[in-house]
Image 1: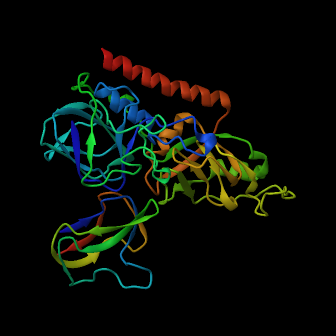
Image 2: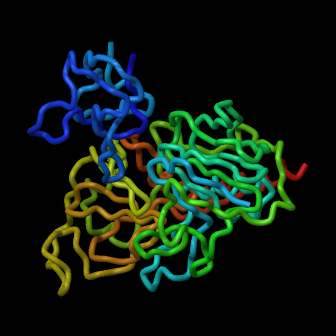
Image 3: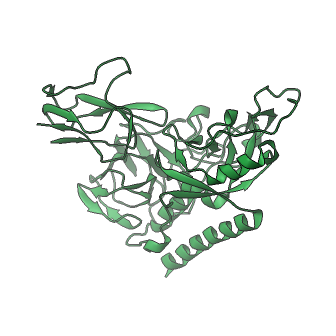
Length: 76
Length: 324
């Protein structure tokens, strides 16, 4: 299972630079859990999971550009 | 005759062709960022070309129809769904009361225009329904749409459906995008080397781009011609004694990141402007995603007017095709 980016912009896996990532391998992911942020048009938008499962890994690195529909993270 | 907004997407606003005539008072023109797409969407459903539509950026809204009507979606490429079934873009079709309009992921471009037969019939502010949130003008009580809003539609008697824009007349920027620039008022303020470098560099759209302005990163920092700062201008070489800005003008604060002023931009200020993007290419800017590579192409007035005519000819061709 994968979580896709709904938007183009810059992806962040952490809520702020000095905090840990929203999810790490083995974490439980519920529907509507925030797994990252997309920065676009001077706004940070929460990326919420539309699926439930166990978090495997981020596919996109923190602070990198993403296109709409890009795979951000994988779940098991 | 109404629409019910279930989800509003990222930022979805009511826009028409804007409210020109008040820029000298500091009120921007507003209106669609891609006016070509708005005009064609309206033509497809039988509306006047300047009727009010919904402009959605990056993410489509979800809408329930509370009456039968006809719709068309133009602009960026984003799969359109009615009750989950994919429909043709750049084409008009009928929808029934109770059906739900939703969208897939954005594939190309940045903004879609959803036209409804009869047009959106919210009150006019200074002659336009376009949303300008900072001035609380147009839209729904001066703001963008939000989930739960009910949006009125106008007279359906001229509704058209089953029309389609031929693929070669659907206008979107290439990737990388070329934006044609006419050097302007403060061109002499930068060195000859910077004047050339600006057109050679590969720029990228910054993620903070919005309806006011679109910022570009990745090019070389400007070198300025030395000067004694005039009274009232700051010591920064990119400052001027406050002046007027035009739609499409390019300011470069501190000589670092060019910003192209768009539909909701301020009308004046203290940054020098090196020139302006030509009117024929302003719609393209409305369709640029963040991180899109961009080249600026130098043109003269003659070429700018020729490009404007080409764009007008495309609209004329579309009118002819749809009337046949």
